[in-house]
Length: 255
Image (cartoon, rainbow, N blue to C red; front, top):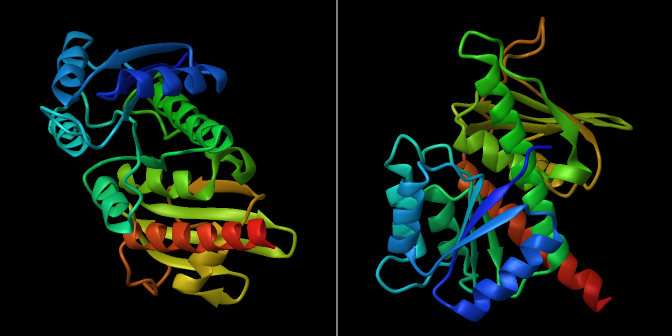
């Protein structure tokens, strides 16, 4: 696993201190700090964008988190930089806005260390995948994408495939068969689990805690392309899946 350097952006010194402590506890190797988006952008340019993850707050003077994400995504060097928003802005429209403008992941304050650890783990997996691709060269076949949902997380995986504009099939092996999601240029086209397909199948897959997954850049041999049975955007699907999971967790905690 490659070392992970994080640029942490928050206008509150106390908040940066608390988050930096948690980041170190979940295995981050090096942490740089910036007090707002302008400071972060300056540091990124000086570093030639050689960081593994940008973690930013939303509300900051000078340049807020959304403006920072948009500025980073406009640069060729920052187009593939993983970005995580950690904010007290927990409304669905806010999260959707952040994801739509280029954030890879979103964590609401206050957060549990376990949640952040899982998302950091996903970022590390993605960074290693991109590193292997860069070392292999442009003419090499794409690196194999496979793993376990217990370590990565379905939402993080779908977010990465959406951000990377991947085309292919994400297949999850289950004890009773398989489940999967078909992508076209990063957008979900179809989702199935057993004999069922559509948006409800996507939400059922999002609830899975375990299962080996594999992403195939092309449909399996002999299998025709999947029809488009999912009409919602990928961001909308993820938002609804997160809402349903939150409801289940709240019921479990109350019961």
